Length: 240
Length: 296
Ligand SMILES: Nc1ncnc2c1ncn2[C@@H]1O[C@H](COP(=O)(O)OP(=O)(O)OP(=O)(O)O)[C@@H](O)[C@H]1O
Ligand SMILES: [Mg+2]
Image (tube, rainbow over all chains, first blue to last red; front, side, top):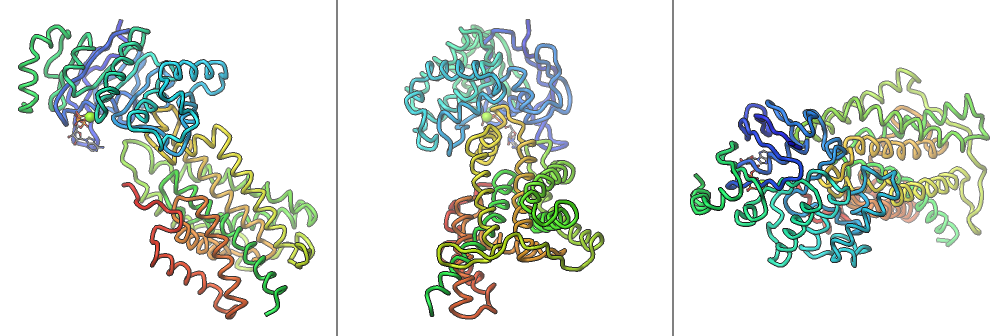
Protein backbone atom coordinates (compact mmCIF):
# COMPACT_ATOMS: atom_id res chain seq x y z
CA UNK A 1 0.00 0.00 0.00
CA UNK A 2 1.26 3.42 -0.79
CA UNK A 3 1.55 5.82 2.11
CA UNK A 4 2.70 8.82 0.13
CA UNK A 5 1.92 9.17 -3.52
CA UNK A 6 3.42 12.03 -5.50
CA UNK A 7 1.71 12.42 -8.84
CA UNK A 8 3.17 14.58 -11.60
CA UNK A 9 3.88 17.60 -9.43
CA UNK A 10 5.41 20.76 -10.80
CA UNK A 11 6.37 23.64 -8.58
CA UNK A 12 8.95 26.29 -7.81
CA UNK A 13 9.71 29.29 -5.63
CA UNK A 14 8.49 31.94 -8.04
CA UNK A 15 5.62 32.09 -10.47
CA UNK A 16 6.64 30.96 -13.91
CA UNK A 17 9.90 29.32 -12.80
CA UNK A 18 9.38 25.66 -12.00
CA UNK A 19 12.11 23.76 -10.17
CA UNK A 20 10.34 20.40 -10.23
CA UNK A 21 8.82 19.14 -13.48
CA UNK A 22 6.19 16.37 -13.42
CA UNK A 23 7.80 14.48 -10.57
CA UNK A 24 6.09 11.24 -9.56
CA UNK A 25 7.11 8.97 -6.71
CA UNK A 26 5.57 6.30 -4.62
CA UNK A 27 6.49 5.69 -1.01
CA UNK A 28 5.08 2.44 0.34
CA UNK A 29 3.93 2.05 3.93
CA UNK A 30 6.89 0.82 5.97
CA UNK A 31 9.37 1.36 3.16
CA UNK A 32 12.77 3.04 3.17
CA UNK A 33 12.93 5.15 0.04
CA UNK A 34 15.94 7.12 -1.08
CA UNK A 35 16.32 10.15 -3.32
CA UNK A 36 19.71 10.98 -4.78
CA UNK A 37 20.87 13.50 -7.33
CA UNK A 38 23.39 16.25 -7.96
CA UNK A 39 23.43 19.67 -6.31
CA UNK A 40 20.51 21.84 -7.28
CA UNK A 41 18.49 18.92 -8.66
CA UNK A 42 15.50 19.86 -6.50
CA UNK A 43 15.75 17.20 -3.79
CA UNK A 44 15.27 19.62 -0.90
CA UNK A 45 12.61 21.46 -2.87
CA UNK A 46 10.65 18.23 -3.12
CA UNK A 47 10.75 17.63 0.64
CA UNK A 48 9.73 21.24 1.33
CA UNK A 49 6.80 20.77 -1.00
CA UNK A 50 5.67 17.57 0.69
CA UNK A 51 5.82 19.26 4.10
CA UNK A 52 3.79 22.26 2.91
CA UNK A 53 6.48 24.95 2.91
CA UNK A 54 5.89 25.26 -0.83
CA UNK A 55 2.63 24.82 -2.67
CA UNK A 56 2.61 22.82 -5.85
CA UNK A 57 1.30 24.37 -9.01
CA UNK A 58 0.30 21.23 -10.79
CA UNK A 59 -0.17 17.56 -9.98
CA UNK A 60 -1.21 16.07 -6.68
CA UNK A 61 0.31 14.66 -3.50
CA UNK A 62 -1.66 12.12 -1.53
CA UNK A 63 -0.91 10.99 2.01
CA UNK A 64 -3.06 7.98 2.86
CA UNK A 65 -5.39 9.05 0.06
CA UNK A 66 -5.77 12.58 1.45
CA UNK A 67 -4.78 15.46 -0.82
CA UNK A 68 -2.32 17.68 0.93
CA UNK A 69 -2.60 20.63 -1.43
CA UNK A 70 -3.18 23.87 0.53
CA UNK A 71 -2.22 22.32 3.86
CA UNK A 72 0.28 24.28 5.95
CA UNK A 73 3.25 22.60 7.65
CA UNK A 74 1.47 22.45 11.01
CA UNK A 75 -1.43 20.59 9.42
CA UNK A 76 0.90 18.19 7.61
CA UNK A 77 2.63 17.47 10.92
CA UNK A 78 -0.73 16.58 12.46
CA UNK A 79 -1.27 13.98 9.73
CA UNK A 80 1.78 12.13 11.05
CA UNK A 81 4.60 13.43 8.86
CA UNK A 82 7.83 14.79 10.32
CA UNK A 83 10.48 16.70 8.42
CA UNK A 84 14.14 16.85 9.39
CA UNK A 85 15.65 19.63 7.26
CA UNK A 86 19.27 19.87 6.28
CA UNK A 87 21.59 21.26 8.97
CA UNK A 88 20.68 22.27 12.48
CA UNK A 89 17.08 23.06 13.25
CA UNK A 90 16.53 23.75 16.91
CA UNK A 91 15.84 26.65 19.30
CA UNK A 92 19.27 27.86 20.44
CA UNK A 93 18.19 29.84 23.51
CA UNK A 94 16.04 27.07 24.94
CA UNK A 95 17.05 24.02 26.91
CA UNK A 96 17.18 20.58 25.31
CA UNK A 97 14.06 19.66 27.24
CA UNK A 98 12.15 22.72 26.06
CA UNK A 99 13.20 21.98 22.48
CA UNK A 100 11.77 18.49 22.81
CA UNK A 101 8.59 19.79 24.44
CA UNK A 102 8.00 22.03 21.44
CA UNK A 103 8.47 18.95 19.27
CA UNK A 104 5.54 17.48 21.17
CA UNK A 105 3.34 20.49 20.38
CA UNK A 106 0.78 18.55 18.35
CA UNK A 107 -0.18 16.44 21.36
CA UNK A 108 0.53 18.91 24.14
CA UNK A 109 -2.78 18.13 25.83
CA UNK A 110 -1.82 14.48 26.29
CA UNK A 111 0.50 14.52 29.33
CA UNK A 112 0.96 10.79 29.30
CA UNK A 113 1.95 10.53 25.66
CA UNK A 114 4.32 13.45 26.15
CA UNK A 115 6.06 11.81 29.08
CA UNK A 116 6.44 8.57 27.14
CA UNK A 117 7.70 10.46 24.09
CA UNK A 118 10.35 12.25 26.16
CA UNK A 119 11.47 9.03 27.81
CA UNK A 120 11.69 7.23 24.48
CA UNK A 121 13.74 9.99 22.88
CA UNK A 122 16.09 10.25 25.88
CA UNK A 123 16.44 6.50 25.69
CA UNK A 124 17.37 6.47 22.01
CA UNK A 125 19.69 9.47 22.33
CA UNK A 126 21.60 9.27 25.61
CA UNK A 127 23.88 12.05 24.34
CA UNK A 128 21.18 14.66 24.78
CA UNK A 129 19.57 12.96 27.73
CA UNK A 130 22.52 13.89 29.92
CA UNK A 131 22.25 17.51 28.71
CA UNK A 132 18.53 18.00 29.02
CA UNK A 133 18.88 21.20 31.01
CA UNK A 134 21.58 22.71 28.80
CA UNK A 135 20.73 25.43 26.32
CA UNK A 136 20.83 24.13 22.76
CA UNK A 137 23.31 26.84 21.73
CA UNK A 138 25.94 25.23 23.95
CA UNK A 139 25.70 21.77 22.37
CA UNK A 140 28.38 20.51 19.99
CA UNK A 141 27.53 20.31 16.28
CA UNK A 142 26.78 16.60 16.49
CA UNK A 143 24.65 16.96 19.60
CA UNK A 144 22.76 19.86 18.05
CA UNK A 145 22.02 17.73 14.98
CA UNK A 146 20.83 14.89 17.17
CA UNK A 147 18.58 17.30 19.06
CA UNK A 148 17.17 18.53 15.73
CA UNK A 149 16.35 14.93 14.84
CA UNK A 150 14.97 14.02 18.26
CA UNK A 151 12.70 17.06 18.24
CA UNK A 152 10.95 15.76 15.12
CA UNK A 153 10.90 12.14 16.34
CA UNK A 154 9.12 12.70 19.64
CA UNK A 155 5.78 12.70 17.83
CA UNK A 156 6.39 9.13 16.51
CA UNK A 157 5.68 10.05 12.89
CA UNK A 158 4.34 7.57 10.37
CA UNK A 159 6.40 9.13 7.63
CA UNK A 160 9.78 10.73 8.19
CA UNK A 161 11.26 13.10 5.60
CA UNK A 162 15.03 13.43 6.07
CA UNK A 163 17.22 15.86 4.14
CA UNK A 164 20.97 15.15 4.03
CA UNK A 165 21.31 13.92 7.61
CA UNK A 166 25.06 13.47 7.39
CA UNK A 167 26.09 16.82 5.91
CA UNK A 168 28.89 18.41 7.91
CA UNK A 169 29.04 15.84 10.70
CA UNK A 170 31.94 13.84 12.10
CA UNK A 171 32.11 10.22 10.86
CA UNK A 172 31.16 8.81 14.25
CA UNK A 173 27.99 10.88 14.39
CA UNK A 174 27.22 10.03 10.77
CA UNK A 175 27.14 6.30 11.43
CA UNK A 176 25.14 6.94 14.60
CA UNK A 177 22.53 8.87 12.61
CA UNK A 178 22.20 6.16 9.93
CA UNK A 179 22.01 3.53 12.62
CA UNK A 180 19.16 5.50 14.14
CA UNK A 181 17.33 5.75 10.80
CA UNK A 182 17.66 2.01 10.25
CA UNK A 183 16.29 1.28 13.71
CA UNK A 184 13.34 3.66 13.26
CA UNK A 185 12.60 1.91 10.00
CA UNK A 186 12.71 -1.46 11.71
CA UNK A 187 10.38 0.01 14.32
CA UNK A 188 7.81 0.69 11.60
CA UNK A 189 8.50 4.28 10.52
CA UNK A 190 8.34 4.91 6.80
CA UNK A 191 11.39 6.86 5.69
CA UNK A 192 11.98 9.11 2.70
CA UNK A 193 15.66 10.01 2.70
CA UNK A 194 17.36 12.62 0.53
CA UNK A 195 21.09 12.11 0.44
CA UNK A 196 24.14 13.14 -1.50
CA UNK A 197 25.99 10.32 0.16
CA UNK A 198 25.13 7.85 -2.60
CA UNK A 199 26.67 4.87 -0.85
CA UNK A 200 24.70 5.40 2.33
CA UNK A 201 21.49 6.06 0.40
CA UNK A 202 21.82 2.84 -1.60
CA UNK A 203 22.94 0.90 1.46
CA UNK A 204 19.90 1.88 3.51
CA UNK A 205 17.09 2.25 1.01
CA UNK A 206 14.99 -0.46 -0.53
CA UNK A 207 13.96 1.64 -3.50
CA UNK A 208 15.53 4.77 -4.94
CA UNK A 209 14.81 7.69 -7.19
CA UNK A 210 17.39 9.77 -8.94
CA UNK A 211 16.46 13.42 -9.46
CA UNK A 212 18.22 15.48 -12.09
CA UNK A 213 17.29 19.04 -13.04
CA UNK A 214 13.92 18.68 -11.39
CA UNK A 215 12.88 15.41 -13.01
CA UNK A 216 13.15 11.77 -12.08
CA UNK A 217 15.85 10.36 -14.35
CA UNK A 218 16.11 6.90 -12.88
CA UNK A 219 14.26 4.74 -10.39
CA UNK A 220 14.56 1.21 -9.19
CA UNK A 221 15.47 -1.16 -6.40
CA UNK A 222 18.66 -0.63 -4.42
CA UNK A 223 19.96 -3.78 -6.07
CA UNK A 224 19.65 -2.13 -9.47
CA UNK A 225 21.27 1.06 -8.22
CA UNK A 226 24.11 -0.96 -6.74
CA UNK A 227 24.82 -2.54 -10.07
CA UNK A 228 24.75 0.79 -11.84
CA UNK A 229 26.71 2.54 -9.08
CA UNK A 230 29.76 3.28 -11.19
CA UNK A 231 27.79 4.95 -13.96
CA UNK A 232 25.69 6.90 -11.47
CA UNK A 233 28.72 8.26 -9.64
CA UNK A 234 30.42 9.16 -12.90
CA UNK A 235 27.29 10.90 -14.15
CA UNK A 236 26.69 12.78 -10.94
CA UNK A 237 30.30 13.94 -10.83
CA UNK A 238 30.00 15.29 -14.33
CA UNK A 239 26.63 16.65 -13.31
CA UNK A 240 25.01 15.31 -16.44
CA UNK B 1 21.71 70.61 45.27
CA UNK B 2 19.83 68.96 48.07
CA UNK B 3 19.75 65.19 48.07
CA UNK B 4 16.02 64.90 48.71
CA UNK B 5 15.22 66.75 45.49
CA UNK B 6 17.81 64.75 43.61
CA UNK B 7 16.43 61.41 44.75
CA UNK B 8 12.96 62.61 43.89
CA UNK B 9 14.06 63.21 40.31
CA UNK B 10 15.86 59.90 40.35
CA UNK B 11 12.67 58.10 41.24
CA UNK B 12 10.65 60.10 38.73
CA UNK B 13 13.19 59.12 36.08
CA UNK B 14 13.03 55.44 36.97
CA UNK B 15 9.23 55.50 36.97
CA UNK B 16 8.97 57.11 33.58
CA UNK B 17 11.78 54.92 32.29
CA UNK B 18 10.08 51.68 33.13
CA UNK B 19 6.91 52.83 31.42
CA UNK B 20 8.88 53.80 28.31
CA UNK B 21 10.32 50.31 28.53
CA UNK B 22 6.83 48.86 28.35
CA UNK B 23 6.39 50.49 24.92
CA UNK B 24 9.82 49.35 23.80
CA UNK B 25 9.24 45.78 24.95
CA UNK B 26 6.04 45.72 22.92
CA UNK B 27 7.86 46.92 19.80
CA UNK B 28 10.78 44.55 20.27
CA UNK B 29 8.50 41.61 21.06
CA UNK B 30 6.50 42.06 17.84
CA UNK B 31 9.70 42.58 15.87
CA UNK B 32 11.43 39.51 17.24
CA UNK B 33 8.60 37.27 16.05
CA UNK B 34 7.22 38.94 12.93
CA UNK B 35 10.50 40.63 11.93
CA UNK B 36 8.36 43.68 11.32
CA UNK B 37 8.54 47.06 12.99
CA UNK B 38 5.14 48.26 14.09
CA UNK B 39 5.16 52.00 13.46
CA UNK B 40 1.59 52.32 14.72
CA UNK B 41 2.56 51.29 18.26
CA UNK B 42 1.82 54.80 19.55
CA UNK B 43 -1.67 54.63 18.10
CA UNK B 44 -2.39 51.55 20.20
CA UNK B 45 -1.12 53.53 23.18
CA UNK B 46 -3.55 56.27 22.12
CA UNK B 47 -6.44 53.81 21.79
CA UNK B 48 -5.63 52.38 25.21
CA UNK B 49 -5.73 55.85 26.73
CA UNK B 50 -9.06 56.76 25.08
CA UNK B 51 -10.60 53.46 26.11
CA UNK B 52 -9.46 53.90 29.69
CA UNK B 53 -10.79 57.49 29.76
CA UNK B 54 -14.13 56.33 28.36
CA UNK B 55 -14.40 53.47 30.84
CA UNK B 56 -13.46 55.54 33.88
CA UNK B 57 -15.58 58.58 33.05
CA UNK B 58 -18.71 56.96 31.59
CA UNK B 59 -18.94 53.41 32.89
CA UNK B 60 -16.81 52.42 35.85
CA UNK B 61 -16.51 55.67 37.77
CA UNK B 62 -13.29 57.19 39.12
CA UNK B 63 -12.75 54.63 41.88
CA UNK B 64 -12.68 51.62 39.58
CA UNK B 65 -9.88 52.94 37.33
CA UNK B 66 -7.86 49.77 38.06
CA UNK B 67 -10.61 47.67 36.50
CA UNK B 68 -10.39 49.79 33.38
CA UNK B 69 -6.74 48.93 32.73
CA UNK B 70 -7.11 45.17 32.19
CA UNK B 71 -10.28 45.81 30.20
CA UNK B 72 -8.48 48.29 27.94
CA UNK B 73 -5.64 45.82 27.51
CA UNK B 74 -7.99 42.98 26.66
CA UNK B 75 -9.98 45.03 24.16
CA UNK B 76 -6.84 46.26 22.40
CA UNK B 77 -5.46 42.70 22.44
CA UNK B 78 -8.49 41.59 20.41
CA UNK B 79 -8.35 44.68 18.19
CA UNK B 80 -4.72 43.73 17.54
CA UNK B 81 -5.66 40.15 16.68
CA UNK B 82 -8.15 41.33 14.09
CA UNK B 83 -5.93 44.00 12.62
CA UNK B 84 -3.13 41.48 12.29
CA UNK B 85 -5.48 38.94 10.74
CA UNK B 86 -6.96 41.22 8.10
CA UNK B 87 -4.23 43.77 7.38
CA UNK B 88 -0.88 42.17 8.18
CA UNK B 89 -1.21 38.39 7.91
CA UNK B 90 -1.96 38.48 4.16
CA UNK B 91 1.61 39.77 3.73
CA UNK B 92 3.06 36.67 5.39
CA UNK B 93 1.12 33.79 3.84
CA UNK B 94 2.10 31.64 0.90
CA UNK B 95 5.53 30.67 -0.34
CA UNK B 96 8.60 30.95 1.85
CA UNK B 97 9.36 34.43 0.62
CA UNK B 98 8.66 37.03 3.29
CA UNK B 99 7.00 40.32 2.59
CA UNK B 100 7.57 41.99 5.93
CA UNK B 101 8.49 45.25 4.21
CA UNK B 102 4.92 45.49 2.94
CA UNK B 103 3.58 44.80 6.40
CA UNK B 104 5.79 47.55 7.82
CA UNK B 105 4.37 50.03 5.31
CA UNK B 106 0.86 49.02 6.35
CA UNK B 107 1.66 49.86 9.97
CA UNK B 108 2.67 53.35 8.83
CA UNK B 109 -0.68 53.70 7.05
CA UNK B 110 -2.40 52.52 10.23
CA UNK B 111 -0.63 55.22 12.22
CA UNK B 112 -2.03 57.95 9.97
CA UNK B 113 -5.46 56.33 9.84
CA UNK B 114 -5.95 55.87 13.59
CA UNK B 115 -4.77 59.36 14.46
CA UNK B 116 -7.30 60.82 12.08
CA UNK B 117 -9.99 58.44 13.19
CA UNK B 118 -9.49 59.70 16.75
CA UNK B 119 -9.91 63.29 15.57
CA UNK B 120 -13.11 62.37 13.72
CA UNK B 121 -14.58 60.41 16.63
CA UNK B 122 -13.51 62.45 19.65
CA UNK B 123 -12.28 65.76 18.26
CA UNK B 124 -8.85 67.31 18.62
CA UNK B 125 -9.35 68.10 22.33
CA UNK B 126 -7.37 66.87 25.29
CA UNK B 127 -9.15 64.88 27.97
CA UNK B 128 -7.95 64.12 31.46
CA UNK B 129 -9.33 61.25 33.52
CA UNK B 130 -9.56 61.84 37.28
CA UNK B 131 -6.40 61.09 39.29
CA UNK B 132 -5.86 57.44 40.11
CA UNK B 133 -4.38 58.15 43.52
CA UNK B 134 -3.38 61.06 45.71
CA UNK B 135 0.28 61.87 46.35
CA UNK B 136 2.10 59.27 48.40
CA UNK B 137 5.56 58.39 49.68
CA UNK B 138 8.23 55.91 48.69
CA UNK B 139 10.19 55.80 51.94
CA UNK B 140 10.75 59.45 52.86
CA UNK B 141 10.25 60.66 49.29
CA UNK B 142 6.99 62.16 48.14
CA UNK B 143 5.80 60.99 44.69
CA UNK B 144 2.76 61.72 42.62
CA UNK B 145 0.05 59.12 43.18
CA UNK B 146 -0.49 58.71 39.44
CA UNK B 147 3.16 57.98 38.88
CA UNK B 148 3.25 55.53 41.72
CA UNK B 149 0.25 53.71 40.27
CA UNK B 150 1.86 53.68 36.83
CA UNK B 151 5.04 52.18 38.32
CA UNK B 152 3.26 49.44 40.26
CA UNK B 153 0.93 48.71 37.34
CA UNK B 154 3.83 48.43 34.90
CA UNK B 155 5.75 46.11 37.21
CA UNK B 156 2.69 43.88 37.56
CA UNK B 157 2.13 43.78 33.82
CA UNK B 158 5.79 43.06 33.09
CA UNK B 159 5.74 40.30 35.72
CA UNK B 160 2.68 38.75 34.11
CA UNK B 161 4.23 39.06 30.66
CA UNK B 162 7.36 37.34 31.91
CA UNK B 163 5.39 34.47 33.43
CA UNK B 164 3.37 33.92 30.28
CA UNK B 165 6.40 33.95 28.00
CA UNK B 166 8.48 31.75 30.34
CA UNK B 167 6.05 29.14 31.53
CA UNK B 168 3.16 28.59 29.16
CA UNK B 169 2.83 26.66 25.92
CA UNK B 170 1.92 29.86 24.10
CA UNK B 171 5.00 31.50 25.56
CA UNK B 172 7.19 28.62 24.45
CA UNK B 173 5.75 28.85 20.93
CA UNK B 174 6.35 32.62 20.92
CA UNK B 175 9.98 32.17 21.94
CA UNK B 176 10.43 29.34 19.48
CA UNK B 177 9.08 31.43 16.62
CA UNK B 178 11.48 34.23 17.47
CA UNK B 179 14.45 31.84 17.52
CA UNK B 180 13.77 29.62 14.51
CA UNK B 181 10.85 30.15 12.19
CA UNK B 182 11.42 26.97 10.23
CA UNK B 183 11.97 24.93 13.38
CA UNK B 184 8.72 26.08 14.93
CA UNK B 185 6.85 24.91 11.85
CA UNK B 186 8.53 21.50 11.70
CA UNK B 187 7.49 21.18 15.35
CA UNK B 188 3.90 21.53 14.19
CA UNK B 189 3.08 25.04 15.43
CA UNK B 190 0.88 27.30 13.32
CA UNK B 191 3.35 30.14 12.96
CA UNK B 192 0.84 32.58 11.49
CA UNK B 193 -1.31 32.14 14.58
CA UNK B 194 1.77 32.83 16.71
CA UNK B 195 2.35 36.05 14.75
CA UNK B 196 -1.20 37.06 15.48
CA UNK B 197 -0.90 36.43 19.22
CA UNK B 198 2.45 38.23 19.34
CA UNK B 199 0.92 41.28 17.69
CA UNK B 200 -2.03 41.19 20.09
CA UNK B 201 0.22 40.96 23.15
CA UNK B 202 2.59 43.64 21.86
CA UNK B 203 -0.12 46.21 21.21
CA UNK B 204 -1.87 45.43 24.48
CA UNK B 205 1.36 46.41 26.26
CA UNK B 206 1.14 49.76 24.46
CA UNK B 207 -2.51 50.05 25.49
CA UNK B 208 -1.50 49.39 29.09
CA UNK B 209 1.04 52.21 28.92
CA UNK B 210 -1.61 54.53 27.45
CA UNK B 211 -4.15 53.62 30.10
CA UNK B 212 -1.67 53.92 32.98
CA UNK B 213 -0.33 57.26 31.82
CA UNK B 214 -3.68 58.80 30.89
CA UNK B 215 -3.93 61.06 33.96
CA UNK B 216 -0.29 62.17 33.59
CA UNK B 217 0.13 62.74 29.85
CA UNK B 218 -3.59 63.10 29.04
CA UNK B 219 -5.71 61.76 26.24
CA UNK B 220 -5.60 63.23 22.71
CA UNK B 221 -5.20 61.97 19.16
CA UNK B 222 -1.42 62.31 18.96
CA UNK B 223 -0.47 61.40 22.50
CA UNK B 224 1.11 58.17 21.24
CA UNK B 225 3.69 59.98 19.12
CA UNK B 226 5.98 60.74 22.05
CA UNK B 227 5.62 57.23 23.43
CA UNK B 228 6.53 55.69 20.07
CA UNK B 229 9.53 57.95 19.72
CA UNK B 230 10.79 57.03 23.19
CA UNK B 231 10.12 53.38 22.42
CA UNK B 232 12.36 53.53 19.38
CA UNK B 233 15.05 55.50 21.22
CA UNK B 234 15.10 52.72 23.79
CA UNK B 235 15.39 50.10 21.09
CA UNK B 236 18.38 51.85 19.57
CA UNK B 237 19.98 52.03 23.02
CA UNK B 238 19.06 48.52 24.18
CA UNK B 239 19.34 46.69 20.88
CA UNK B 240 16.53 45.58 18.59
CA UNK B 241 15.11 42.21 19.54
CA UNK B 242 16.34 42.21 23.12
CA UNK B 243 13.76 42.37 25.91
CA UNK B 244 16.28 42.77 28.76
CA UNK B 245 17.89 45.46 26.58
CA UNK B 246 14.59 47.32 26.41
CA UNK B 247 14.18 47.18 30.15
CA UNK B 248 17.67 48.45 30.96
CA UNK B 249 17.59 51.06 28.21
CA UNK B 250 14.17 52.29 29.32
CA UNK B 251 15.42 52.89 32.84
CA UNK B 252 18.57 54.50 31.48
CA UNK B 253 16.64 56.85 29.22
CA UNK B 254 14.28 57.81 32.04
CA UNK B 255 17.24 58.54 34.32
CA UNK B 256 19.15 60.57 31.74
CA UNK B 257 16.11 62.69 30.91
CA UNK B 258 15.31 63.26 34.53
CA UNK B 259 18.89 63.96 35.65
CA UNK B 260 19.42 66.27 32.69
CA UNK B 261 16.29 68.15 33.63
CA UNK B 262 17.37 68.74 37.19
CA UNK B 263 21.08 69.27 36.61
CA UNK B 264 20.96 71.28 33.39
CA UNK B 265 17.55 72.48 32.35
CA UNK B 266 14.15 70.84 31.98
CA UNK B 267 13.43 72.55 28.67
CA UNK B 268 15.84 70.27 26.80
CA UNK B 269 14.46 67.02 28.24
CA UNK B 270 14.10 65.28 24.87
CA UNK B 271 17.56 66.36 23.80
CA UNK B 272 19.27 64.37 26.58
CA UNK B 273 17.66 61.19 25.34
CA UNK B 274 18.82 61.89 21.81
CA UNK B 275 22.29 62.62 23.15
CA UNK B 276 22.30 59.18 24.74
CA UNK B 277 21.14 57.61 21.46
CA UNK B 278 23.88 59.37 19.48
CA UNK B 279 26.49 58.43 22.05
CA UNK B 280 25.48 54.78 21.88
CA UNK B 281 25.34 54.74 18.12
CA UNK B 282 28.89 56.00 18.13
CA UNK B 283 30.32 53.47 20.57
CA UNK B 284 28.05 50.44 20.08
CA UNK B 285 25.80 50.64 17.03
CA UNK B 286 24.06 47.32 17.81
CA UNK B 287 22.82 48.66 21.14
CA UNK B 288 23.67 47.41 24.62
CA UNK B 289 22.18 43.94 24.21
CA UNK B 290 21.76 43.80 20.45
CA UNK B 291 22.91 40.95 18.30
CA UNK B 292 26.11 41.79 16.47
CA UNK B 293 24.70 40.81 13.14
CA UNK B 294 21.28 40.55 11.68
CA UNK B 295 20.76 37.42 9.63
CA UNK B 296 18.95 38.01 6.32
N1 LIG C 1 14.46 29.54 -1.27
C1 LIG C 1 14.71 29.47 -2.60
N2 LIG C 1 14.31 30.45 -3.42
C2 LIG C 1 14.53 30.36 -4.75
N3 LIG C 1 15.17 29.35 -5.35
C3 LIG C 1 15.58 28.33 -4.60
C4 LIG C 1 15.39 28.35 -3.18
N4 LIG C 1 15.92 27.21 -2.68
C5 LIG C 1 16.43 26.52 -3.74
N5 LIG C 1 16.22 27.20 -4.88
C6 LIG C 1 16.62 26.74 -6.22
O1 LIG C 1 15.96 25.53 -6.51
C7 LIG C 1 16.83 24.64 -7.17
C8 LIG C 1 16.86 23.32 -6.46
O2 LIG C 1 17.37 23.52 -5.16
P1 LIG C 1 17.33 22.41 -4.04
O3 LIG C 1 17.79 23.05 -2.80
O4 LIG C 1 16.03 21.76 -4.05
O5 LIG C 1 18.44 21.41 -4.59
P2 LIG C 1 19.02 20.13 -3.91
O6 LIG C 1 18.80 19.03 -4.88
O7 LIG C 1 18.51 19.97 -2.55
O8 LIG C 1 20.57 20.47 -3.91
P3 LIG C 1 21.67 20.22 -2.77
O9 LIG C 1 22.16 18.83 -3.00
O10 LIG C 1 22.72 21.21 -3.09
O11 LIG C 1 21.05 20.40 -1.44
C9 LIG C 1 18.18 25.33 -7.27
O12 LIG C 1 18.30 25.84 -8.56
C10 LIG C 1 18.09 26.44 -6.28
O13 LIG C 1 18.81 27.56 -6.73
MG1 LIG D 1 19.31 20.12 -0.64
